[in-house]
Image (cartoon, rainbow, N blue to C red; front, side, top):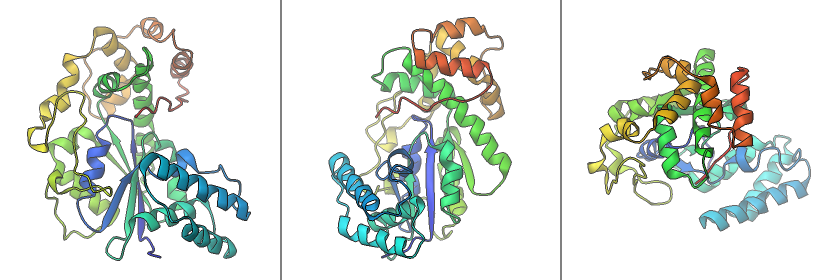
Length: 326
C-alpha cells in the first residue's frame, strides 16, 4: 500500500471559494485533493469506540463503504482496508488518524502522488485534532468577506428565514479561530482570503503548494488544468453571476456582487456580529454604530439562532456550526 508523505485539511465557512481552492491545488500530479468523501471528523471520529475490538473496526469499514457507495458511487475495497486496519491494531498503533490516512491513501494515492488533501467545510475547530493525528500534516483555512458569504448563502440555501443569518455567526467563529491559529505560529496552518485567491491566484496557489511542502518545479497553469479526483473540470457555482467557463468569471462581481443584494437590515446584522474581526482581516466596514436590540430581533423566530446570538453577546464565542446544506 502506498504510504503518504503528508496530509492536508482544507476548511472554512461555506461559500468561501473553497471548492475553487481545492481544484486549483489539485492541478499538479503529486497531490490528490478530494472533497467531502471520507470526512473523518463529521462521520467517523470517535463513533466506533476505542478501535480495540475487531467488530468496531468492521462496523466502521462497512458503514464507510456503504456511505461512499450510496452518496458518491465510490467503491472502497472493504476487505483490503479491513485487513490493513487489523494489522495496525495488532501493532498497537491503530487510531482514528491512522484510519483516515489509510483510507485516503488507498483511495487516492499512487507511486507519483504521495500527498493527499481533503476539503471539508466547517471544521476549523478540528484543526488541532488533525494536526495531532498527523505530525507532518498541514491545514489551510479559507475565509471570505462575511457580507459576501451571507448573501451567497441566502441565495444558495433552502432553509427558511432567518436561518441564513447563521452565516454571520459562523464567519465570526471562523475568523476568531483563524486569528488564534496564526497567533500560535506553529507554521502548520495557512490562512487564505478568498479575495486574495481570486485576484492573485497564481501567487496564492504556489505559496500554498510551498506551504504544504511540494516541489517548486511545478508552476500554476490556471484552473483549466485542474481536474479533480473524480475526473471533472472545475465549474463555478457562484451566487452572483452565471459562469459557463473560467474565461467569463467576473472577479469584480465575485468581490462586490453582495452590494447589490444585501438589505440595510442584513448589512447591519452581519457587521454588528463581525465588524471587529472584519477589520482585523482587512475588510472595510460600511457602518460604525450598531443597535444590538435590532440585531437580536432579526433572529428571535429561530431558537437556535437566538441561542447563538446570546452567546455572541456574552462574548463566549461558543457557536455551533450548523446548517451544513449542500
